[in-house]
Amino acid sequence: MWRLCPYVVNGTLTGGDELMIKVAGIKRGTVIDHVTAGKGLWIFNKLNLASLGHPVVLLMNVQSSRLGRKDIIKIEDYTAVDTAMLGLIDAGITVNIIENEQVVTKTQVSLPQVVSGLFVCGNPRCVSNSDHYVTPIFALYEAHSRAYLCEYCEEVTKVAWK
Amino acid sequence: MLNLCGRHLVSPSDLALSEIDSIIALAQDMQRQRGNYSELCRGKILATLFYEPSTRTKLSFESAMLRMGGSILGFSDANASAVAKGESLADTIRVMDAYADIIVLRHPKEGAPKLASAYSRVPIVNGGDGGHQHPTQTLTDLLTIHAFKGRVSDLSVAFCGDLKYGRTVHSLIETLVRYPGGKFYLISPEELVLPPRLREYLQRTSSCQLIECRSMEEALPHIDILYMTRIQKERFFNEADYLRLKNSYILDAAKLLLAKQDLVVMHPLPRVNEIAYEVDADPRAAYFAQAECGVYVRMSLMAHLLGVTS
Image (cartoon, rainbow over all chains, first blue to last red; front, top):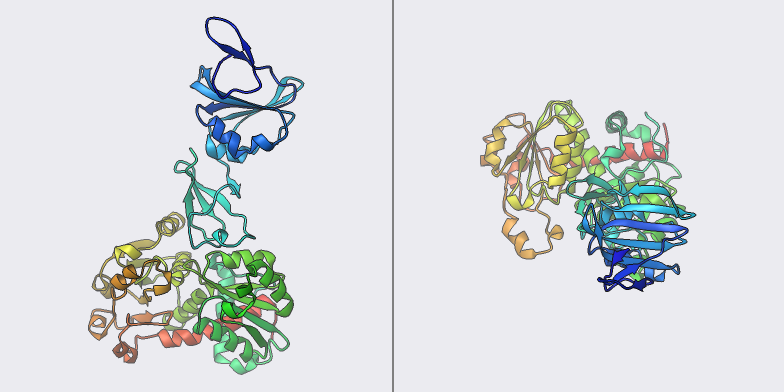
C-alpha cells in the first residue's frame, strides 16, 4: 500500500480514511527503488520509459523508512535498465531485478567509472561537441565533485545531475 | 632503435621514456649524418592534413619526409578540401589512410587526433589539436634541450606567456615531469595560468616543484631554460581579452642581464613581439636551432612509426 500521488498510473484505488492505492507486484521485470522523491519523473523521462512498450508504474512521494519520501518505478518484463545513468542521477537508487515474483539481484547503483554518451563535454573546443561520429566517453576523475575526464580533450566536466 | 611500427602519436604520454630516448638518439644521428638517411623512406607517402594554419610543423614534416626520400601530399586549408562539403573527420581519415603510409593531423578541435586514430589503418601523428597537445613539438624541444644542456633531468625550466591555451607548454611540461629533478617556474598573467586540472595532475604524478610567478624578473636569475610562448589570438573567444593580454611578457636584452650565462631561450615559434629582435644575437637564443631540430626529430619519429631502418 502506498499513499496516492497525482502522478501514479496503472494502480487500483481503494477506500478508507485516507485515499490509498495498491499497486500489484510484478512477476518479472525491474523495480527502481529508493529514488529521491521528486526525481522519479525525471528518470522516467531520461530512460525514455514511455516509449519502452512495457507496462510501467511510476510512484511518487511514497513513504520510506530510510528516506522519509521516495519515488519508485516498476517496469514489467524488462531488465536492461541503464544503471550508469541511474548512478549519475541518484547514487542512492537500488535496482531490483525480479524473476517469478522474487528479487534475484539487488544492486545499489553508484557513480559509473566510465560513461559513454550520457552527457556532453563541457569544453566547447572538444571534438566531441562538433563531430557527429564521436560518442563522448568519460572516465570518473573525482567522485565527490562528480567530475569526469573526457577521453578526447582530457578536460574535466562536472556532472550536474543530482 | 625501438620498434614503434604502426603506432599512433596522439599525446606525449603515448611514448615510454625509453621510446622517447630512442627517437632522440636516432634524431641526433640524423642531424650528424643526414646523408645516410636520404633513401630511408623511399616509396613512403606522408599525408599532411592541416585544418589550421601552420608553417613550421607542416613544412618540417614535409621536409623531414623529403629528406628521407619519401613523398608528400595533403592540404593546408580545410576549406579547399572535402571538409568544406561537410565531410566528417572520420570519413576523411578512412579515405586518406588508403592514400598515405602515415598521416599528420592538425585540427582546431581538441581530441581530433584521438578520434582520427580510431579510424586509421596507418599511424596518426598529432600535429597540434587546439590548446590540447603538440607531441612532436615536445620531441623537438627535448632534442633541443639535449643539444644545449646534454640532459633533460635536473633542470630549472620557466614557461612564460600563455600557459592556459599553449599546447606546446602542456605537452612539454607533462613530459619533463617524468624526468627527475625538475623545477618549473610558471610565468603568466592570472587569466592564462596553467589549467588547474593539468597542474593537479603534475603534482599528483610527480615530485616536481611548481612555482607560479607573475613577472619574468622573479624567475630569470634561477633558471636553466626559458620557454617563451606567444599569446595566441586564435584561442580567444573574446578579442578584447586578447588585446589586454598580448603584451604581458616581452623578453629583451635588459631582462636577459638578470639571467644565467648558460641560459637557453626557447620558443616554439612563430613569435609576435614576446622576444625582442635584439635577443636573436645573444648566444643564449636557441629558438632557430630549435626549429631545425624539428626536422630531425620528425625524421626520426616517422622512421620509427613506419618501422623503416637504415
